[in-house]
Length: 192
Image 1: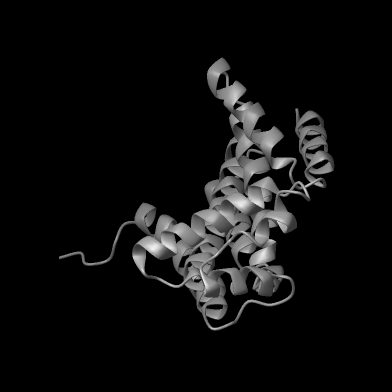
Image 2: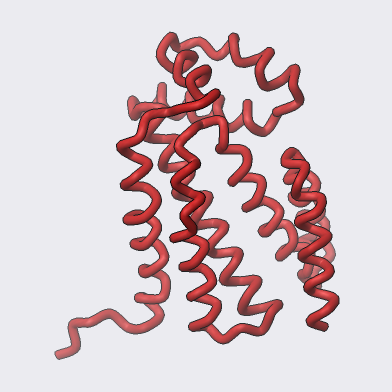
């Protein structure tokens, strides 16, 4: 009798396990730092109104939305906002890894194994250890948005292409995504 899972199951499970080991577990034990102390204080006193000048008046709308969502989920679930934030980071990094896999396979014609290697390299990228501050949520979230939006934009379906454009535009909350999307498009043109 065969007890080992098939290869397709392992291809899905491997990046998730690697992300949990290399991203979530180390982040789980680290406190918020840098400017994220402002968010931590707002969570502790259960009042986000002090964040309005920090985020909304500074034009960081997506960051405020993420912090507000994590805060409200924390109130509903009784799970600490820090743990939910760490879980959010894990999901976003898995999303970036998935988009890297899909772009590598579908648009850069990598074989499954090499696309999986690219996805795993994204997960174990050492910079994720710097994302211990809630102030950085928007940065990694916007990187995921630009990758997702670009993949959707390359679709042949006009509705999906339009949704991709909207997602790309929303990713411009992170200004460096202007350059990133141009770079992705140029690489795509060079490969074609």
